[in-house]
Image 1 (tube, rainbow, N blue to C red):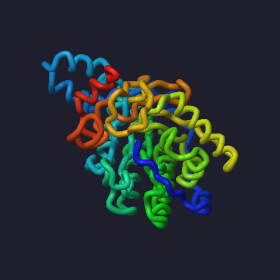
Image 2 (spheres, helix red, strand yellow):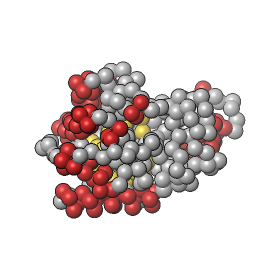
Image 3 (cartoon, one colour):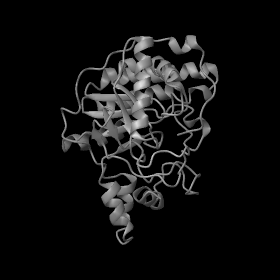
Image 4 (cartoon, rainbow, N blue to C red):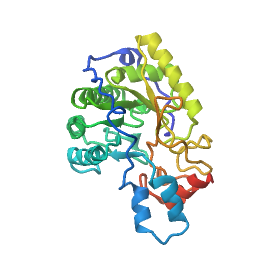
Length: 319
């Protein structure tokens, strides 16, 4: 999903753990009736604003905007506690399970197309604490910081430790403040970081305190490949640290698998809509289909996170 990092963190750092609170046993699946469809997603907004763009509007409505997927929260979200509370409250009112992504780690995306994030470690701690406060006791699924673990080695050694500290803090916040939330720490994708190294990084980043880890976020690898990788990570967690964790897979754009490209590649296709089971604990649309990966690939000039009907149609038609 991003350029592969070649350096590896020192073994002593990777094996270090810090005790964190354990998440409560509230099962958000048992407290809701299906996943929440975001009525204000980028595809939904485009559909509402382009009623006469036939037949694309009908196809995007049917295939994408009416399907359950994640809402991403970052430095664009304003008062994050209020934003998260509003989103999860709207889902709770209709007895549906919302999917949220926390995406504000300092040094986000290592200066790539989605660069940015909180301006300091203290600012991030305040932000992620408010994020967890916004959920509170409401049921939710949260994906914690896509790329942050997989891109660890792009940072100087001291900043790597700071990032691990921040991710452990984030895990602790959800464990303490959101008892009916299942949180998953992002674990890269099937071909990025070797499974034994990813297991060490996830453990060092606090995955033991939360529900589990997420794979293939914003990428295109098949569900089978992602599940096989997740099982390898778990085998290493078991061997090295004596525990395993459930994992989820982003299937939003993996219908045709991966050709090795990660930024707006052509020929990709929508995958299985959000569901429980399917090889992983859940298959989820984490990346919003049709949202750009950046000014790159088959569709140029569209910033990361901006919806493109052309990208959406390509995913619908597999072109």
